Length: 338
Length: 128
Image (tube, rainbow over all chains, first blue to last red; front, side, top):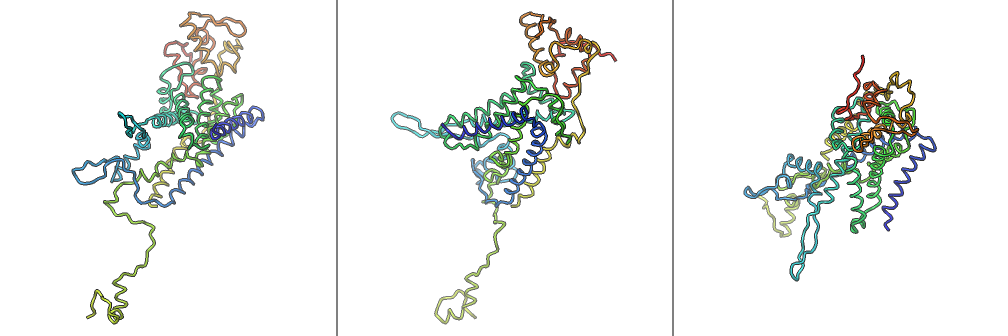
């Protein structure tokens, strides 16, 4: 039994129960619906800026790009422009592929042995699962987040209702099934199972790996439940969220339901947790030194910008100082005195 | 070191996007609209179920109605009190709630829901 994911699971369940009990039993609608949202947003903005500025102040290493292709060389050798860029344009291309398509995960492979006759040979296998679940997870989450803007904008922009139409194009059931919600839940679950099932991954996984995954699964489950099973009154919820988005916070009259507050609390926890966790990769990916630097060390000389000016005393200066004494002592000198 | 300016610019753009709903609404209040009842609906007092249930579950009821009518050919719906209704959006629901614009569309527009009911079904003409 692995304590890391058990503790994370217990933490998520307890946090959900706190929100549910806080609203349903203790009547703390105002705390969970009005105060915590602003607090969480502030924590996110200040924490995020603080973390990024901390990184901005840190020393930038010399060019250490990972080279996954042929470096620019002699004219008849084909240069891998995107995998080993030498220009800013090439770096932008490589970063776009990295940020939008997760290219470095796509190039993942696994080493193993292959039986050839009596002997074993080393073999490399292309492993796509992390990339697949990762990209499904990220894009479905993005779609879900953009869709939720309908609760924070009045009137809802055409772009968002258009996205809803595309997302709900299957027209299954009523309220119509959104593809992104189901994909988000499935992909997050697969990412979690990957950590639990594969022994080597389980060995290196920490509570900080499980907790955000379980929290996001919690968000997805409560969201799916509210839409498809135990319905909540969406007009009242929008009244609450619009109150937040227009700085007129108020709890609308009538029943909203504890499940909504659990969902909201999970989302706000995630938001406030981002600056202190590995989820900062959303900003950090742009600062990866192995990806965002041009491999031009052999074209351009890079001088450490914070080099302290060092006082030097060359041999020539030394000889100028001691020439007569050196000649007297019979030592050879480079410059004979006239 | 020399990237500080770029990082700060990126941060500012990110926070602008993040807080976009605040800029978009500019603090204009938008309370939830109340669906308007017609005279006939007011007189009837009760719908096929209580209001709270109808507020959150009406789409599910219609979905079940559609399936039982189209697939099983059962056109009669019996509610919790044992009262019988013809399972029909146009003939039963919109008999009382004949004001689609004030009853249906207000909340649907507010919550950005675009039901495809009326792609097939007709609704009473609005009387101005």
